[in-house]
Image (cartoon, one colour):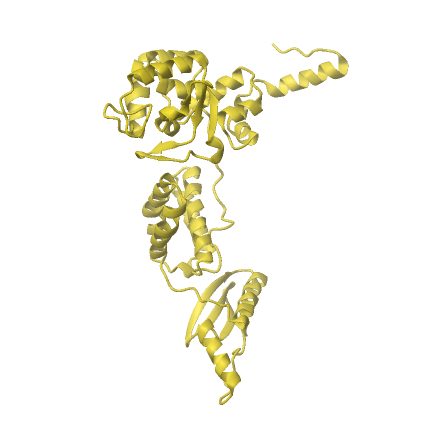
Length: 390
């Protein structure tokens, strides 16, 4: 076992002006000795504050532990070293949600983070001091979830994202010195098959939808709009003269907010069929204080779950079509464009994906024989022989 001790930085020199200044600096920094300690292959940096020890986990790598020790030593000499105040994970998570999430994030994201904290993270880490949580604790937690097999890899990954985000802010606020949720080994996420309806089935679905809601379903099928974007559509977003639809907001839990991503804010073409269905809807639309195109009879916003259970599911049943979600209509929209041989860049812009790569990652598996076609074109260019496929 190796132990390194650093002598006090501010020696007691009684009766001098220098001593008074040094003692003042020691009081401000709160630390006058820093030690590096190893036990059973695990390194820790010990801060001696007002006669008490403050332990900071430094991992199992001696070189990195020494680097952390040296950084703290330099800060201590400058009087910039701040000892993280003691706080539990549960208490800091409440502080993080209140003072950061509710200020900087969208309500739907705050709701999602609260759910992960309440259901999973606080039961696992809530009793621990924030500075006591180490990389191996988080890794052990992830491994336990994988072994239980109750959650999908995506759900596990979704928990670690806010956890790492919270720890990063704890470092910035002075509650921690390192992020134990960084470089965690996470379960591999398999790409789910995208379920979609054919163009013929999309027409059957719209025809089977109740007249007052045909436009609501058509915007998912023919424009690829997300459910929240359709629910948040207001009359001023219908640009009749330009034959375009402006997407600038989304509805969640009765509140209008920005769409999913900045790329989602855009204008999309209004085809003749969609224009006719929207016009029919506008003529019978109830007055709404929020100026909504799709709302209840009293003008209040629709509920997220009701769009599926009250409109989409009954229409699918009447048309005899396989069950899908409203987001499945968006998948069907993209799949229809791919089947029509629309250039992938145009599909990306119409779907309002962040990049072409996102479109390829999600829908590349349904591109029709693209590799075979490409090889055939090269064959014809080089040899003048057209490759044919049955």
